[in-house]
Image 1 (cartoon, rainbow, N blue to C red):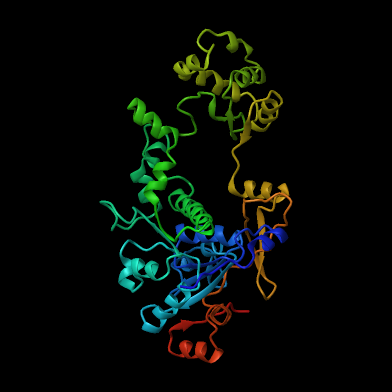
Image 2 (tube, rainbow, N blue to C red):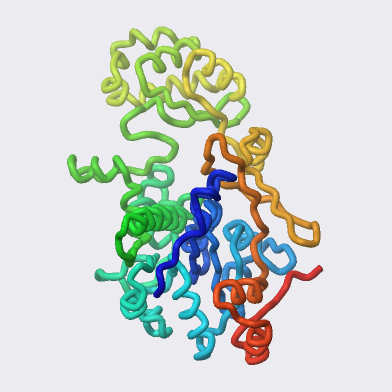
Length: 418
């Protein structure tokens, strides 16, 4: 593999917030963990080529919401990419992908361990031929270990990691998190690892095979709960909307039935809470003098606080608590949260326009670079729509050669319909 350098990324990043401009990345992933990772990288300016089977990434077909044949699920995690639809079961399709690998900096895949080799992409051989290549494998349980050959999805790793055991109400069955954290966290850790590997590569380091396990990532997310268990030997209970250490860090219900949360986690905030609720006598109550005492007597404290919050609507409490220095918020619905984001001015509701003038809105890139222009994002690609552009630019192929592979059904070139 010849040394591939990014195309002057310093100059590119000075124009807009695209620090990965000039890096080429081949995305062999499907569904969520991998595409979420590669969308992060594409948002940061990398040229990401999404390789799909002729039938497309399975996430294109997830009901119930579709725009011109592509699911809302797919559209939310594939902006700023280009698409090639390649039948890798045909020798010419497999060779095409190998040729693209020779021209890329990073490959990302989320096959089960061993599947890549069975497909004809032997990772060890490819990295031997291309010693600067960064190959990233995202899987349920890692490339090695007792569960490595088992399939995994978000709820599987939430269950096995202990995350589900913490989620829900005490005395009731465990529930999964309302977001697919098993997939999303693995995608974020993969993006972090890729950027670290690229930095090392630029300092003269060699390529790397990055091994990301969804289960490992969920275990890392246990945070202080894992430390409590390892050090104190405890089995943390269901968290509901509460905190194991801070009894005034939880949700309450206002008099109108609307829910709010408070995070009064210092003595100053505790006193502000008491003043806001017109319950100043609690400050000198011998049961609640310190944080440790409040924790020990939390059930009695909760009874008092719950009764106090029922005296006024939740929104009134939010204003009163904020004025008394207590962190507080209403529990918003998803539409409410998105409406707030639209009004915030931070670009977190992003319009994506197609070539025909139509478009959609998605949640935007949360990574902001101060003093730099937010780059314009592109609509998620139609299946195989970038074959001509990518194969001519990356491999120098003539249109006739590309058309020949389309005729043989090695390539598919579906387009958005008008």
